[in-house]
Image 1 (cartoon, rainbow, N blue to C red):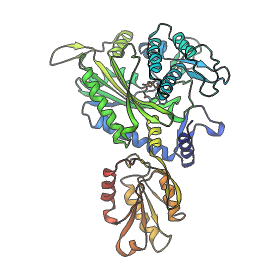
Image 2 (spheres, rainbow, N blue to C red):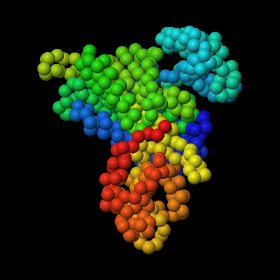
Image 3 (cartoon, rainbow, N blue to C red):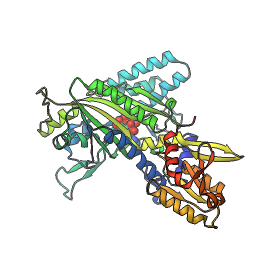
Image 4 (cartoon, rainbow, N blue to C red):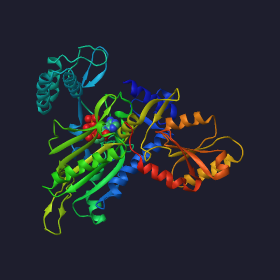
Length: 479
Ligand code: ATP
């Protein structure tokens, strides 16, 4: 892991953003818990997504489908037969890697070394391999021919490439015999597809319309070493947009633009985001792009925007025997809608926000660690301090705290020097610190200290809320 990621992992634990699951028992690999600050960050991101997708579009409806679904769902979706990753093992370190990722990293390395022609040739071969009938073999041959070494041990001592299914299985009920295997859903999307008719019939929507959902998904990821980047239990925020066949490209382009804008609106710098077009389209997709962020571990996917044709609805129709058609009252046409999907990982968005916000700076000769979150996602919006614990200052500070609490999450802190209290709030990413001091007693003003610029201004107590709102609205990311 990179230095920056290590620092974020340790800050997350120290300050209560993210803990390893069941840590007292030694932890559970690639499963994490959100602590008091982390859960606030997460809820803010969820709320912003819901706001941008559901509340700002009168043709998008929300849904909350169950994690457990009828097992035929996963036959119809293709996950039982084809939700595999090609894996390869380093015999020396016993570590397992995704074969496709090793090759992608090799190509990126060649480009960094200025060997563009060679990189292009490997890339062409890689795309062919992804489409080959015996994909594992084709990937294996590239690794052999290019002599790609194991990233951790440096060894060139590989097993064959093998396919692993990523779905978690469990048993329904107590019966031992019979086929009662069910799965923890590996994506939230299928909960939307199987409810397409229910939502259509109860919401009075007409095509085009969308269904949005936030929820847990589970994948038995084989390689899971990068903190919350790749987890076995994670959360997705997905929206399926149903359109008339033929209209999908227009919708696809419109959603690409909106989804990129959403990340920018969360305070991510444009230079850290880019588009990545899929080399291999799933057989049912007619276009697919990812939004990538420049993580400390390199450029990686945070969101996929996919044009999925009518693949899912058509298969659910075939497997369930229920007609998944839409009747257009204007044109009197009947058809299975096409689908444009936007699918973003909530936890990956959190990791991106942490990476983007993390800064080490020198302030008056002291080193400070500060999380420069967009105020709208910051776990705590403001902290209120009495300068000293006497002269009525705590009472005034408590009153301000109570007042602000009705609007957003705030914190009261009277322990330690003002400098220490500022540092604690910098690490939590709190954009504003409000101090009640001697002048407050005289003229009713307080000091508001800005986390990013360190600027301190005096604001009258009764103007505090509109002042904070204005400042939050005007916020822009620092370089
Ligand atoms: P990857 O190639 O990284 O495995 P994917 O292409 O399989 O991801 P999708 O199935 O398109 O991912 O899922 C949509 C989003 O869900 C991803 O962009 C990512 O943000 C998130 N996601 C997928 N798998 C995980 C995971 N194991 N842990 C955390 N987030 C995940």
